[in-house]
Structures are given as C-alpha cells and as structure tokens.
Image (tube, rainbow, N blue to C red; front, side, top):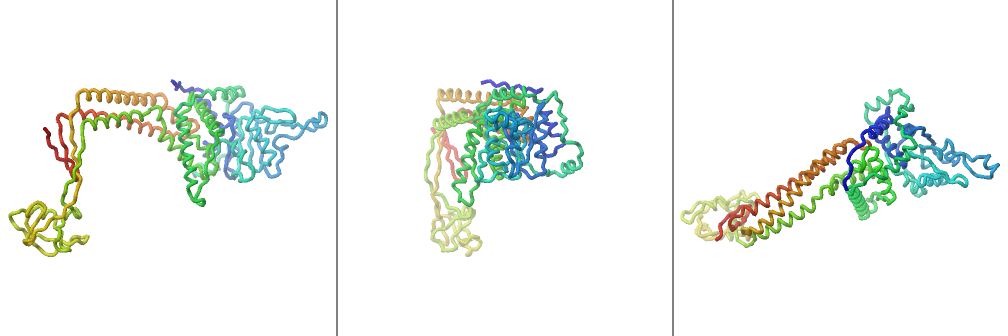
Length: 543
C-alpha cells in the first residue's frame, strides 16, 4: 500500500511551539515535558520517579497550559488520605434531602482535565480502586450515576516504586509511560536554574495555539487512523522475541544471579502502539516511523535497573531490523547463492589426493630420521643447497625449543629424493602426509551461459531498484527523521547507519553478480589448478 509521506508542517510547528513554551525556564527537563504532553494527548497516564524538589509537580501544573480552558487537580498523598480529599466530599444536602450518597466533584480529580498525584503509592485501597476505574474506563461512579470523566492525562509521582505484595500491581501497570526525574547534572544549567527569577507558573502559551476540547476529542479519532506499516509491526515482534530470550536467559541462571524478568501484557503492547500513533500524528505524519519506536523503552521497564536493558534491546532491534521489509534482500541473497552453487558445480570439479612432503619444524628445520637422538635437525636452506655430487660440511642442531645448540659439523650430500648421506651413512628426511586439491575447470555450454546471464541480469535489476528505493526514501521520509518532536535527533544516526549498511550490502551483492559473470565468461579452456600448501598454485592445460 502506498503511504502518504507528506508532513503537515503547520500543525507540527504548532505542537513544537507548545512544547517549547512548556519547557521554558526548565533545565534538563525537555524529555519529561514532551512525554507528559504526549501522554496527555494520548489520554494515558505517566509516572515520574525521582526525589523531591526536581520539578515533578511544576511540570504537571504547567501541562494544563497546553489546553484551552483546562482545569487541573493536584494532591499529595499520605497514609491517611481519604477518598473525600481526592474525589470530592459527600454532598450533605443530597444525602439529607434525597438520601443519595453523591460527591461534589468540582475542583477535584473527577472534574479535572489534568491531575497530578504526588506520592501515589501511599493511596489506600479505596482510592486505588476508584483510580483504576477512572484510568481504565474514564468513568467515575458517583452515587447511582456513572459520570464520564474528561481527564486528559493523569500524572503521578513518587521517590519510590510500589512495594511488592501491597496490592499495587494493577495500579502500577496502568501508568503506561515511566520516566526517571533526577537532579540537574550540568553545572551551567544548574547555575542558570538557581539564579533564574522568572515566574515559572505563568502561562505564556497563546490561546490561538492551545488545544481545545473539540480538537482533543477529534484528535483521538484522527490518531487511530494513523497507518502502522508492516515494517513497524515486524520490529515490535522482534523486540518481543528479544525480551522473551532475555527472560529465558534469566531462568537459566542461578537464582542468586538472576535479574528481574520483564512482563509486558498484550494490553500494554496495544497501548504502546497508541503512543506511537500519537507521536506520528503530532509530528504531522500519516504513518508511524522508526524514530517513533525509540519511545518504546519508556513503556517497558518496571525497575530503573531495567532501563539500560530495554534501551539496548530497542536500539539494537532498530539497528538490525529496520527497513528489512522495505528492502527485502534475503530473496536476492538466496537466489545469488543458488546460482553461484550451480555455476561452481557446472564449471569445476574437485579432486583431493594425498601426497607426502617434508615435515617442517619451527618453519626452519627438517628432521633427519634415526640420526643422533638429540642433534638430528638440519636447516631447510642447508638441505636445499645439498646436491648429489659434492659433500658439504653441515651443522646439525638439537631438538630443544631454541634449536640453537649444535653438535658439530658433518659431511653431507643428497643420495636421492628425501634421503641424505651423513658421514657416509644414509638417512631419510622425515615426511608428513598432506592433502592436495586439484580443481578442474570446464567451459560451460552456451545455453547455460545465456541462462545464467538472464538470472544475474534479473538480480542486478532488482538490486538497482532497491538502490533507487533508498534514494527516494532519503528524499521523502528520511529528511524528517532527525526532526521528531519527542526523540533526541542524535538517535536518528542509528537509522541512517542502517540505511548506509543496506546500501553497502546492495553494492556488495552487485559486485558478487559481476564476479560470477566474469568467472564463467572467462573460462576459455579446460584447466587444472593444483592448490598446494601455503596457497601456492600451479596451472596446467588439459587436452
């Protein structure tokens, strides 16, 4: 299916301006601001993990500035928090006059568009259960009525993760995006932050670009129309397999060495896709691309120790699996391998025979069999200089590792092949059996040559088509990769490296095609090639 790669630049610029204003005056908080807005427009929840005083509540308060006429609710949980403090007090008049147990929800969480709950894990079971219903169904049960909650985004924070065995797993699972919020690291940023006197709670976003309620609802529908290419589905499948393999590796370790395994439910994967679609939509695209997929790690980890693991899994998956469907090189590889094997079979045959050759020691010596137990090694050059006419004084060496000691000189000459005389006694030089390969080439029939030419020309044509696809893709899609609103542009390097890698593979395939054609076209006569040791070859014409 043809995908519309046009970008709505005006819409994208609007979202970019909103993000810039939300981040104004903050330091090292850009990713958190972006993910908070992305989460809210996706109608999902985000959890911030970090110590007190790192701007978690400030970001949540400023988030409502992105939306026109938005209301917000903020609450710091503690062990004694009651539902009244979060969802609103019971209406005494309703209870007295109508015998109805209804809450007054205005200015409380059920009546808010943006909610921030600090120290979320201190919430009691009654608050947790009501929160689950609101997050899951966007419904608040108030007395005998079910009210639709117009909650865009729920932002929760804590300096700790939920304790195991406290019944918090269900609530924890509903926070789709999770992010660490740490103290400012860069010295310059820190200095600018502490001397900055501007009011960070002032709304600087123009009403003309704020997101209205009508737009927000419309965007939920438009978001669901964003195309998810098969390429992205293949990538997600690959990430799932990598996670399963990691979990299996942990099971095979000793219990004391195991790291916590991952559990990502089908529901979470579906919501992950929702986030990717929202990212594509807010970037002005009609389709999800690989850069959007760098958001996935924020939605996979349960413990901070897992962050690096999921980052690596996703990054390597994008590096190795990206564009495998756009440029499916596997069929070309398989066909070229098949043709190469056929060419080899039809144009050559291999015979292996065993031959005996002088055995070398330390690459410098031959051994004189049955001569002195120790001093029985002769230098190769000395042996090669012997002839069967003249005796020469030769030094013989011992068999220590150094081969430096010698016993004196002996009169030696060659008697015959592999035999020498040492002081008038004849000895054999030690030999070793080697395999010698004889490759016979034969000129292929013209019909075969024509058939191979057709097949290879077809492969080369497909290679050219793929190279043209890359060129088109660079002009149309790739130019926007490093401009994703929610992802660091440096991460696009991984994708560009992948494209370059695929280009290199295509050029290598083209080169192999040319080599094969040249090989069978260059065979003019039947020949024999003897492959000797040390890669020496000897050619001889046949027939």
